Amino acid sequence: MTLPRPQSGLPRPAPRPVIGLLCCNEALGRPVQTVATRFIAPLSRFSEAAVILVPAVRDDATIATLTPLLDGLLLTGSRSNVSPERYGGAPLPADQSSDPDRDAVALALAEAMIEAGKPVFGICRGLQEINVLFGGTLSSAACRGEHHRGSWDGCYKEMFGHCHDVELSAGGLLAESLGRRRMSVNSVHEQGIDRLGAGLQVEATADDGLIEAVRARPCGADVLGVQWHPEWDVEQSRESRAFFSLIGTSLRSAAAAR
Image (cartoon, rainbow, N blue to C red; front, side):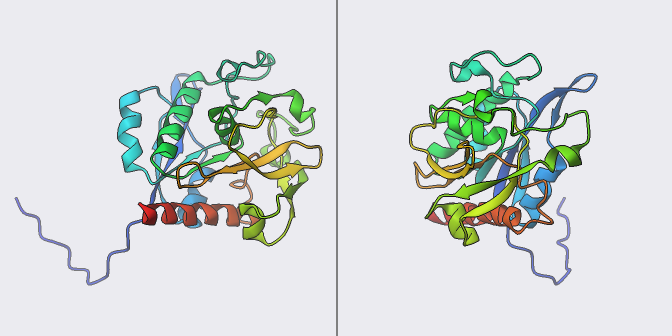
């Protein structure tokens, strides 16, 4: 059967680049895949990308299928931390959780995307995954207990309202896009970069020396990660909107180059 074509007379919008958004594993009475909606909206609005949720379920065949389909990947923040086994670190404190399946998917898919010349971005845990992928390490001691306040079971507004200043690296992507060298960021993490991964460049540093953003371009496309959460205050923050605009620009530049 041949269906009649719609005759609206309106031009069809141009297709958007497609970005994968990594989920997490949680147990809400049963195992579920989760991702906060606040990560999705700015990718659509400010990056002008179409979003596909990527399950954090180990499946090499799915990764091989997704890599040519996606134009980019965003590794989200999470309540869990990267498993120390991934970088030879000490066991996590008893009050911190891990998500080994998320680790496996994030590292394998990010590596495949980078090798394919496609951009990869990270927020909070995502920055830490990028650092581990490049051979770096993580540490709770690096944060000195100063970069996280509140509880996941408490008030999110209070927790994400904990802020500090960072210094943006001269000539870096973030500094160039904002036209200045300092900005205030929220701070919601219990781990941070200890040893920087090989090939990564520092994009931002906190006043206590903690690396807050990294960048690389190993295979012709941007790899960019930030330790803070630009998705949280994107409606109020010009800097957060700029981050998602950078994602959109990078997606289109890499697609054009291919």
